[in-house]
Length: 263
Ligand SMILES: C[S@@+](CC[C@H](N)C(=O)[O-])C[C@H]1O[C@@H](n2cnc3c(N)ncnc32)[C@H](O)[C@@H]1O
Image (cartoon, rainbow, N blue to C red; front, top):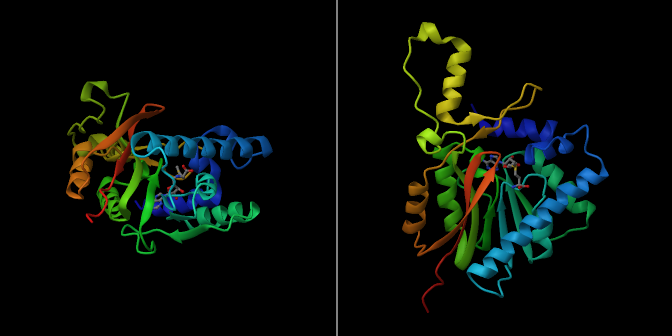
């Protein structure tokens, strides 16, 4: 299954709910107060990210160029644009990007560049003082996510900072330390199509689709040892981590800095 196709369906059908799955953000319910709350949540997130970067790395941290991977409708691009010279937003869904464009134009924001996404981020040019992604990697299957994570590391400028969020487990699997239990082997005849679907979802990433005709939304658990390996191999000497828990989906927000080039 291609998550890219599913995300384009979200972008077309229900983009704001696709970003934050609260009922008030459903396409049919998104009134002015809900929209204001949606963008206010983005401002609060960006305040938190910049505050964390200043706390961990540099009290005067003020990024000139920001990359927001998986920018959606621009919830975070807008406050990042106010705090930097240029923001590049990338997303795999053209409809999400079109909505982000509309949201920037409606606010006369002129320092946001939008681009389509592939796993090597070939449309992203240059280096960034802040490489950011929130609630995105969790929706990308791990083999692809590893490639993207490595590429995001390469896009950090010397001395630049990354703030990257990913999930690693589920609170409702305490017996297996957050990991979905391995599927029980059983005869194919005893499983049936629904059983095979559920087993696949349990082992490959749980799906948060609901019966309302929504597209699929995968939740994937990354192996933090692999992520630490990628960071260390990229020359990162230390990282700071803050736990996240979104309805039992356990994650980490990782903050780290690429060493400045030797002079
Ligand atoms: C839950 S939304 C979060 C949007 C934004 N980060 C925010 O917090 O407002 C996830 C976004 O990731 C995008 N996305 C999913 N898979 C992607 C991929 N492989 N490359 C780039 N973007 C992707 C989706 O299209 C969607 O806009």
